[in-house]
Length: 104
Image 1 (spheres, rainbow, N blue to C red):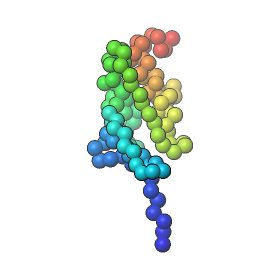
Image 2: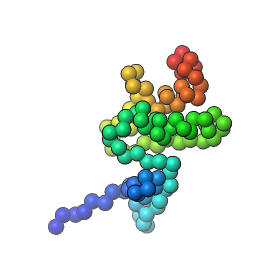
Image 3: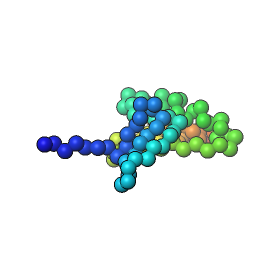
Image 4: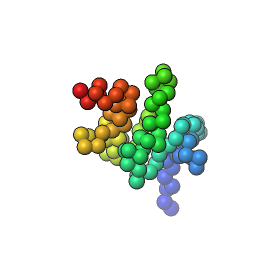
């Protein structure tokens, strides 16, 4: 009989809650949004999850973007990007500070 693998992390159908398996059960975390799409590019992700929060950050609010996934699945690329496709950090800093402060 095959052993059923159970993931330590599960995204609930509301796309705002992740359930994490712990040693004593499960723990739910409610987030502003969760993306599990492999089709969504950095620009779409940024517009959907980060861009709308930039004005709040400018007013002193907090914002956290978390990447979770297997090694080599693109987490670092999504955060930092490359010269041809800037990542989330670059885009956020550009929107907060203005293009001259980030590029210069």
